[in-house]
Length: 222
Length: 78
Ligand SMILES: [Zn+2]
Image 1 (cartoon, rainbow over the protein chains, first blue to last red):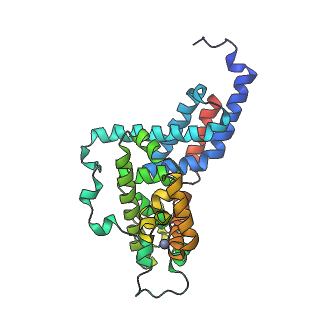
Image 2: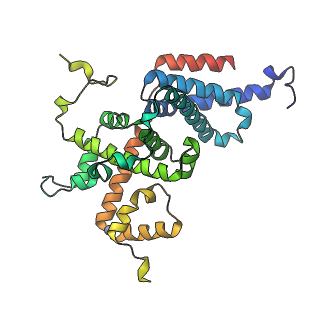
């Protein structure tokens, strides 16, 4: 509550804080940007989310309890920055994009889809272990595309749980939704994700759709 | 004694919650035990684990030059 010391800007303490902050932000940059990109699926938005999060983090650095918590704290700021941006946008659109009752919209095939089970269908001729071969062949581009194809509420829970390792309770708190909703979205999201991967995996590489730009294989378009 | 052995179906049904570490320690330990002896469920669990690892890898990407400059300019201001 005390006003800052007049010489605060130049104090060694402040300089040390600044240097640590900078060092950590730079170290985490690839993951901050990558996470923002998966959350927003749009490079411009991802840049804004990262920049805004870094700015917020700097102005709220007093909230940080110890530098050993910086990483988790910064990602929390990043997620919150994304979530407020997402809410702002959504409140302008109609709210039809809510997926709070995912089960109602899903066919049983979509709800229970399991890649592993598909890979073990008896008529598929693999040698060795099909699941390992599938994973060995799975390219990151396909996985990104499959993730990006998920509706926002599904994709967000996957990124929070699978990428960032939050608990269901934490996700419920972040998104302000019931924990049961987290559970059902997550399960629907995983089934959908696996279904997309199965579809991509069964298409010859040449036929893959290069439409959603950004991938490095776009060069061969006529 | 016999109630603590799970069927494969029960294991698969709770597999994601298990991988997410959302189960209480007792159930989780039961699944651990099942996976040690059941090859089929173990291989399924490994598959889901590896897939998740790949999902994690998608969230790491070098930021474009423009963002790096933008962050650098912010940091210099602090
Ligand atoms: Zn089993």
